[in-house]
Image (cartoon, rainbow, N blue to C red; front, side, top):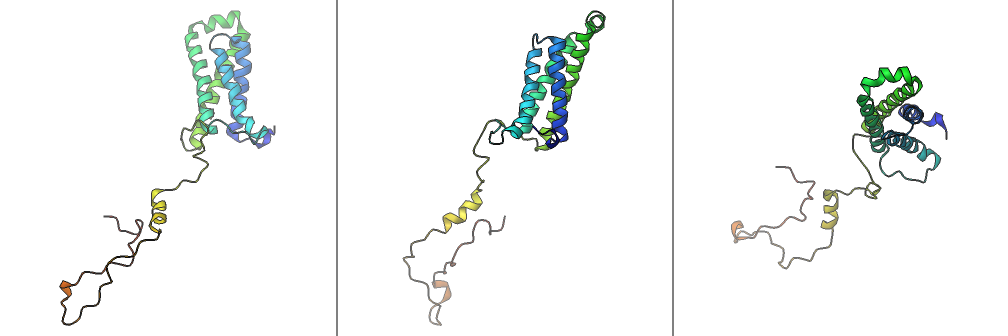
Amino acid sequence: MDFSKLSQNDKLAVYGSAAVIVGGLVGVGAAGLGIVAVLAAAGMLAVIFLPQMSPETNLPGSKGSLMLLLGAAAGVILVLGLLSIIGAVGLMLQFAALNTLFYLIAVAGGILIAWVGWKEFQAEGGKFQLGTSTASERPAVSPAAAAPAADSAPREPASEPPASEPTASEPAADRAPSEPASEPAEDDRPIA
């Protein structure tokens, strides 16, 4: 694990995850939904360090999408937990000051990893990708690119003989128009 190879977003996510894990375990004591926030922060650390520790292992989605989900889960759970006890924080500071301070540190860490998850998601283009699909590894072939390949197949010769040049005795209107040698590809046609 080389901490110097991490980007600025990854470093912030590591700091926030550590705050959620330590603050959640000390402040909440892993009770209620606080354990889900702690697990989400541990998952955030796995998303950050797993590609570095095991390069052959693929994540089950894009890094930004996973960071957004995990960060949002931890942040929302901790903020909603704080809002539910906001009236009692003053009283809690008098009787359980250490636990309350650690819980507030966990809430700040949850907000931080939610924000970092959003930044990483936006840096990837804001495209939500979950699951391991092989479609992203294959090169995409557009229908326009595949059409000329189908047109290049050998054709049967025409059953009619080629039209001859009109002579002075034969009017040009009676003669069948000659077909072009080849039709232009779909990409070469003008757009109407």
